[in-house]
Length: 260
Image (cartoon, rainbow, N blue to C red; front, side, top):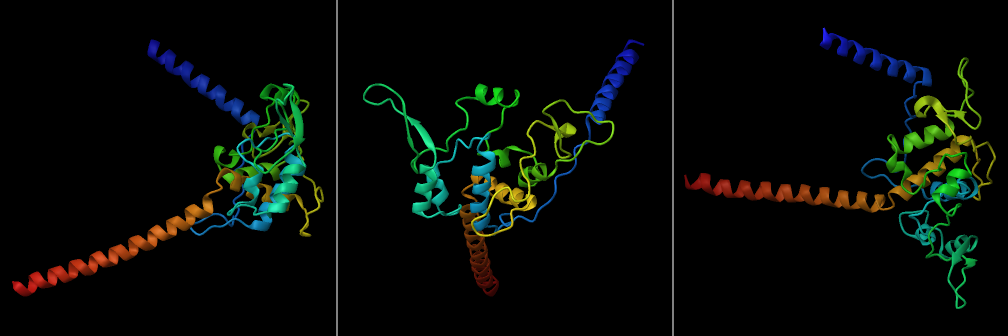
């Protein structure tokens, strides 16, 4: 009887959790995109990377940091590959806190290519306080840190909708069908024509979401193209080695057969 009561209580507990999850909303499956960087021979689209950095700089950088990236990375092979002059200009457009100087005081200066990306907030608590208690995550490795990777990030960026009937949201909370619970504190910051792309590409919400997701995918895995190249070389080497081993074995066994 005691065991039956325990099982009954457990079942009721699990049922109540299930009701809460259903009430919170069902998370939709991320949209699947045929990214250029996926697959064994995948490569990053250089134009998309440069546009994605522009979206990050003009839209995302006011809240989200990228603490593991330096401005010089923007000019390295496999990435956006901005020219040396462009990298210097991008870095110099940011004010960097430095010091202390000869008088023991901190000072600000224009950024240099060797500097890390400037964070929009001095610390985590300041970031959370400025965003209603929700800390905007660092975007350096966000694509690798989220289940679904690039598809998930893209889906969240385009997944904002008006809440369905019967769903109420607190102030500062938005409905997004790709989030767990369908609730997110980050507002929808993308709108058609929000940025003006230097290459003339139409800045639709879909295009900006794809571009900034591509940029974030590169930031999370900047060695991806080199790893793909190495993988192909290793496969070719193994195939050739297998052929040589097969021919050698065939020659050895032919001698044994002739002796017998």
